Length: 440
Ligand code: NAD
Image (cartoon, rainbow, N blue to C red; front, side, top):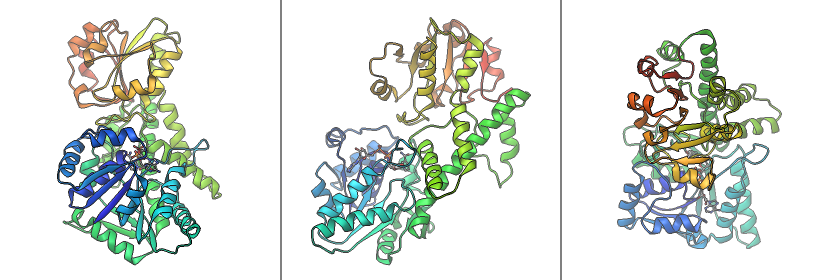
């Protein structure tokens, strides 16, 4: 099949590359000329494990192309995936300007049947807006061409995006057009050879499904984070509690880890957008509002512990920070807890030396030449002469450190662990003060 993917970010590039991997001809469009230049020169503008090999293989095979030319992109694919960003607007609602601009471009330039697929996470009712935007453009051209708008939300996880796209748990397709469903079924057939994973539903339910999934996951995290705060006060251990409840199949072990708050490009904005959509429709989502509020509190939990240990005035102190990305295996720092922690440390007069295996380039882009933030080449380099170590992202390489070296490198042997990486006795056996989240 001939497929155009509009937006070549985490979702668009992975989708395009994986669809090409199954033998489709794919053209990826982005308006950012720098991204397309990097891709055309054989580079990858984001960090995503395994993506470089899939992209290289399919470019080499002539199935995957990149362009900034909107007209060429609209002409190319019968299926037009919209995978552009939907960042939060000032009021928390999803900003649809990129989605609708992509839709208008399709309406302005299409000359034959198109299936327009919303892959971006968009509020309920957006497919109607996309349909209307295309209709308006066609009317302005005096044309009445056939097209369908399908909702096909994406559930991939950054850091495991290629694997998730190639082996999805489910493929949600919201459509009210049989021809479009037929096409989507054929498109996704290679991704579901062992069982039917297509969940076909109406468009609005599909749009809501994506928000429901992220809202549920964020709820599990905030729930455990609040219990971890309570465990801290009561002398209980949240990790024991997780194991104790996880054995119940109605609960399960997954996604119940306490930490220093969720971040990323999805949970924070999608929780906000769903709350906003509900409010606009006359309903308060009280549980979800609490999930968001609890997360704001949680992003401060390490700062609170640091202040309790070192006092409110941190001037002259330097903290080593392990992990900048919002989670491991990605360079994405959107809404990352590290950003809040760094800002709060700066506010109290401290400086920071950070290390992250892949997100330091992104951090330099965000923080510019901020003099209070230095970067270390290796995790241990960040520690030399620092007052304490603060762990923010659970990269594998932080899991078994040389505690002896940590103790001798730090001015004060203190670790504030926002990801509960160690059995609490282990760092303590090296004479290190170890403070984690909800651990005894
Ligand atoms: P991103 O910011 O990484 O990429 C979006 C890209 O779209 C950018 O490169 C931008 O230049 C481009 N773009 C914007 N307007 C355009 C236009 N009119 N034409 C062509 N290109 C345009 O975003 P992302 O993380 O890939 O997310 C995309 C969507 O998918 C969002 O709605 C997001 O919520 C959703 N989503 C993201 C993830 C994730 O893990 N990142 C997972 C599931 C769903």
